[in-house]
Length: 234
Image (cartoon, rainbow, N blue to C red):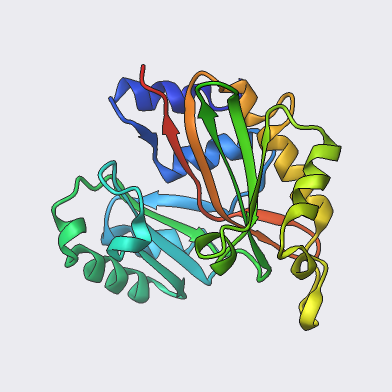
């Protein structure tokens, strides 16, 4: 079963959530595309890491004490060489919230092609069980709360209706000169998360909350560039 090992290891370590690398392995196990990535223990591994990945690169701190990495300065993007990576790590370690946290390493990954930001998430409701959510990223989800929910498992028709309910749906179709985002790729990701054999149903007893934010959707594909999974209490 995809994700079983990652969840078991997190529980063994007494963690309340999967780290980002484990979360992305979970997504990849269900067929959702994620960037090529690796974890470095510290800045000393920057040169070797650069040789294995294609810039531009994103760097993220990995810590069981930090869920919202960007809020504490734990994310740097568009890095192009080992020197920039080393400097980014030194800068991160000067941040008080990071300096006092337990650090497991630094996730380095290839940046996804440009596209529309989409959010897919879910939670375990005490009454209805797993629910799946979709919304447009950026201001649409943060300020306008432009999202749509359904009880799992969803069908393809459910997924299509969820997208059509979004106020920002015209942006996905290429409104105001934007390139269209692949509707098929979003539907596919929604079903892999909330469908009959999807992630939320498969791990209904273990996933309390899922936040795949954002998924970058181009004209042809969707790539999950960040993922957060909170576990149910054992």
